[in-house]
Image 1 (cartoon, rainbow, N blue to C red):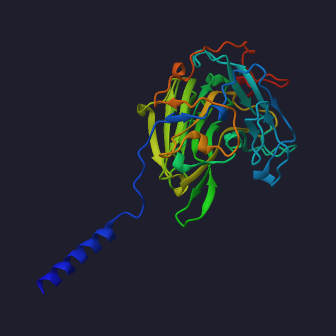
Image 2 (image 1 turned 180 degrees about the vertical axis):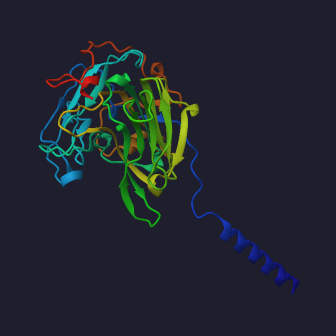
Image 3 (image 1 turned 60 degrees about the vertical axis):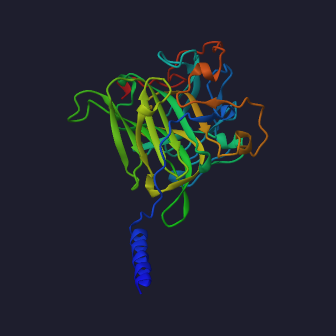
Length: 365
């Protein structure tokens, strides 16, 4: 009798513990973007003086009118592609790296847009265009979450007088992902970070400044904003742990990200990441047929993976790739570790938005 009572008590205690246990898996430990193996052939440093971009207008506008106008724009190295959902920025070109950039960098990528809605129509609303770094074409697949991918980029914020004079979102760094919802369904979603502008022409804003916001919390709302009062270079990064969580990092300057640059971890939209498909950028403006967006410059967009135990990067590829030295990258990866030879190519012309179209100065805002 005592034995049976003891067993019954143990059973009840076990049942209470099981009932109280959380239904969700513990959050993954954040790691710094740039940890693991650098997928060099899937990334771009814009050092090739012959880098170019081919426009194939009219652009896509599937988000607005369900029309993808193939074949779409693409870069000469085959890495960059027009987004079929929203279309290509109207200006995409290699430029001289703005002051304060990565040591030794001579080339960076400028993009801006003017006609961001449906081709031939003016919406008089905020619209955006996309530029995709489609590393999945080099891999022949998306990156499964068990490979714990991460991505980072340097972004140049121009002087505030050169921004489109509009309070709202202006630039986004995004990841194209597929995630599992709480009901088990797998859908696409796009976590990321945005630069927003706060214009002094708005009521209650004394002087121009910018904000960095994170997309998104479990409900899909933007969260955790940082005020930016000085323009210049910023480094942004996201890492993805095997539990499907996204971890966000950002820091002023061009130094590699560290643990001190951690901002937030989240399951955006309540989704658990299953695959990371590509890495892309938004540029937004007021689609009125006259106003150019802010001119954005990025450098060294990079993608990294942490191979699952017992596997190597070679096993990630589903297509034959060019020979590449396997490169271990620490959490605080320095350019000297990445390669000892300095960049020594011809300098392109200084960056500007002038390309047969008017510039985006304060007078046009």
